[in-house]
Image 1 (tube, helix red, strand yellow):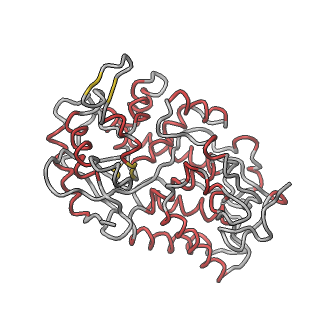
Image 2 (cartoon, one colour; image 1 turned 180 degrees about the vertical axis):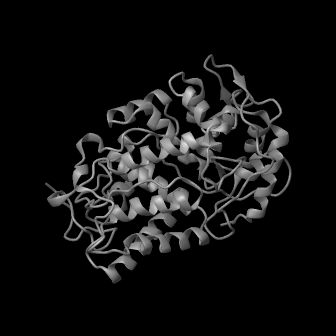
Length: 397
């Protein structure tokens, strides 16, 4: 597999010249910031650099992946989760160095593989939004039982994130065996990586148990898909007790990571508007950006691993640039554009684009609330010895 030399990301500076006629909004930075995106394995073929307005030249390799969402809201348990049993100090006596151990492992992983943060956030969201934050997404399928990993929407979940959780759990088992759940590892690792890439630090109540089951069908039903309308995505969030504001704020996690070309190909190739009229690309997109994506993704049918950064301007930095990009026609996915055109979400996009502090505050509250959604405690779960396997087999009741 071809690897990206991240020096190529400096070419994203060319995007500034390609955005002359975009929608009004905050000032565009002169170049792409690649904070936290040091060179190393695991960075896929970046359509991102070519998407930055590059035309000719060698094919730019694949980019990095993920996505989670967050927003404001009282940090209380959604859907009746037993929040009262969780506490940030849950391991203060039984495993006092738990958070430090996890931080050391995932920070090292992020330094070696800069796509880890985005991947971890995506895995965390896929875990919590399906049956709650219970590490059910970590269960590996066997010959006898399928798991959430078998769901089509989870096939692209990045291995670096799973590896970081496994390494963290191994380190914890050496110091305090049988104490820290995999669900808590995933929640803490996500917080560490948000902070490491420049985002806010938020409370993470601890004491979750790991699930006793993992459904191979639930993820495709319960998780938002890249081709969903904002209306449909809102239905999913509202049904789980989250607000419109929380959905928009959580979507800001797309400031990290990438999307494969197939997820936005309908916007840049063979595009037709709602009346069926053909166009070179989705006219809501910045023309220079759209043409760059067309050039970068031209081989995506032969190589489905080709991808583009969700945030072409600051792809490795956790900030509010995702919303600024949406204002300027630089949103990658159709759902990005939908958040601009939908009157329920546009005011929030404008608010976060103009005020990074407001975004961080709302994201922090929403992540805390998400981390408490549907948690298992007591006899409803277990502390797995290995994160990818049940201690005694799945609960089939």
